[in-house]
Length: 354
Image 1: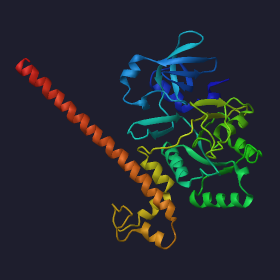
Image 2: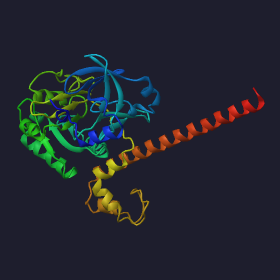
Image 3: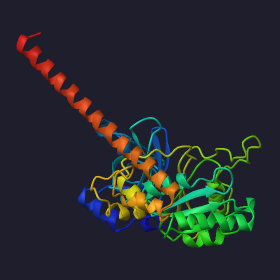
């Protein structure tokens, strides 16, 4: 195995040299556990931890290693290593923690994100748009996997594929079923040697079953559909990287009930490029596309040139992004005011020798 087989390329080699990390071994993070990581290079796999200095310098969770990261390591023995630094990320998949302004890095250095949706009761175009927005914001090419197609008729499947094509133009759609094996060859042919692919979707949409099929093993535990809810049960509990026989690299993720938007303004703009193009024709440059006169977006809805559901989801996601940025700014202001208060207090203590 060579480093390129793990996804290493000129981008990482150049940054490794720029940061002066040539003297260190490099490895890729293939699994993340509490306060520890499994990293892999061409010769070994190690249980690795970051240094206390890195913890001290980290400003947020985004400054910690994530699955898919390339890291500089120092080997302690044949089983353990210390992570000395993280190479700059080429791409990154991130989301907001529930009810918080903190950002979680889902995975790093991904070439393609498979947004997995099943055809059963969890089928949701708005949630797909969320997945595509965070993928495009991280400069990751998205594709849609419509899974469990054995659960509906051919007519029903054709209807859903038409919906997807109308809503998500120029994005690949792969219908699959691990029960009938339909579409699995197409999915497998989508995956190229040395490239990294990430599966993203809710619990129970069949991500783990798809990966098991691609691997040709049952390495990833799966559960049957819940009789009570009609949904697949949550199975994957942590992120992990897997290597296919054809040289492709896969990252599985725990199912996510919620994908909170962070500062993904660019991603929203790319996913809703049709609305972004219309917005340029609005009468006012700061048009919110809600009730302003001369709004080209609202005009397109009236003339049935724009899907109203897509428009509604656009407003919702844009509001989330704006709120996230606002709360982040407010937090910075509070931190700045507190810093000024501490500084003033120390000056007074020094002046009056308290």
